[in-house]
Length: 374
Image 1: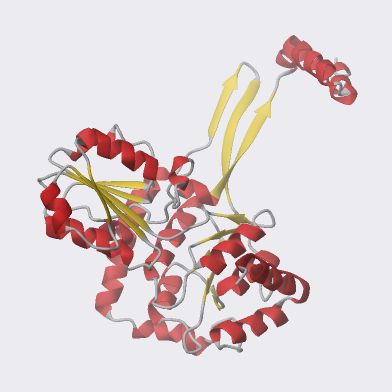
Image 2 (image 1 turned 45 degrees about the vertical axis):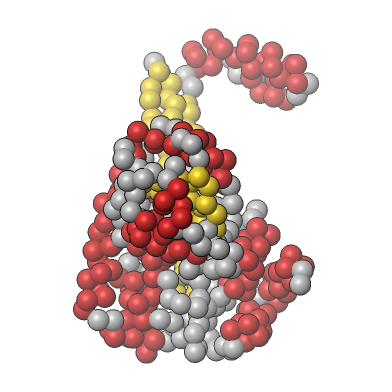
């Protein structure tokens, strides 16, 4: 199967014929041919969520909010004599969030909606594949809790296309959220027509551990990320042969190295999505880590705690992308604009710099734009 060609065909169909093709592919891939928008009765299923699960969501939301609100960046405007310089932040007007199907993933919705709202985004669209023709009540509850009114029953490539081209609802400016290989390829192909957060690949975990680490903890941590799929990756880098023996499993790549410093160097080469450091003094090793999506220190900060309730974001770079990209933050939902206002005195004092550069580059009207101002 040529995923690239298949995805391109679906995208082209939806760009050309809109909602008609969205429904065609929804029926083909999800067995659903009804309206994309939720009915009033479906919105009402949020009331089915138990009090305990509501409390779980509320507590997680509080932790996420407390963590992410520290990322809010104020405008940076400064004055120099009569001139003005700086950067101002503006929220993206309209974003789309993709929540994968299969098992419900309310954590994905929480991890994306909360920083979006803190960034000041006003219009948020959520797309998720319908299961038996509807959406999980907990997803609906979270959407209602955060004031989202656009929740659509559409998944896969057709969801990415609908958000990009405005097929069935108004198009968005940037798309967030993970998906399978088809969704990932669709995001790659629509980039430019719309912004995307990242190209999320299979989940990854790397653990650096010494003889002080508890084998049961480490093995379960490594296997936890393997639950995301057979293509997920798990590495154990350790100085302890006993720990290596305990954690032996066909799905875990285990390396026994002479020193913890050697472990950190190999971890930097791997550039994993998640990196746990479970050693006698984990903080001591942090300075050696250059490439990782997230670093979790100590016996009681397993990756699943970050997946769900820790407060830091679990949308992270994968596939060695940690060498050049970062965890999802409030800033990903904003744009930064330069603001400048030169006084006449400063412009006249330094315009010769611009005139000379325009002359070197052979741009006559650039030069004249500065010369005509007296």
